[in-house]
Image (cartoon, rainbow, N blue to C red; front, top):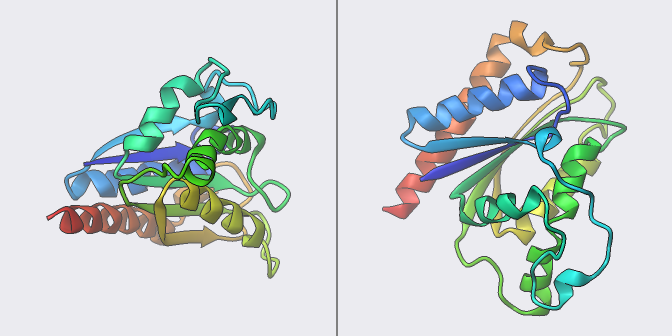
Length: 193
């Protein structure tokens, strides 16, 4: 069983990165193999809306996303971890999500969705404590998961974390991420029989 972690922050060892590492460690403790992809390190262009994927459900742009597509398709569970940037996701993660248009085309135009049902965990940190801090990004992630046939099963949304690495001092939040990753992997393993 594979759990794929998508790190949305452009900063290494920041709050979202530390939480993702803990969640992946939790998944490993439950018997999963894990892999982490850092959106900012992928050699990929943003979607150019060329509609090339509408011919066969495949992206015609050949770059780093070519290797990411099968990982997204074959993972048994996906964890997305990201900071909030202006109430949404950072540009690097948004580029990755937008480049998943071929999966949308396959699902809705060709009636060929990803058949395997998977599970998903969403982790986000925000610098403010406004009432709607996570609303927009939560909707984006739910839409992304839905397109990939990933059930949105859990979330960890932490407000008022704005300085790089502050989460390292919040053991309860780190443990929450660990347990969420562990739960995610166990659920997938139990359902697989």
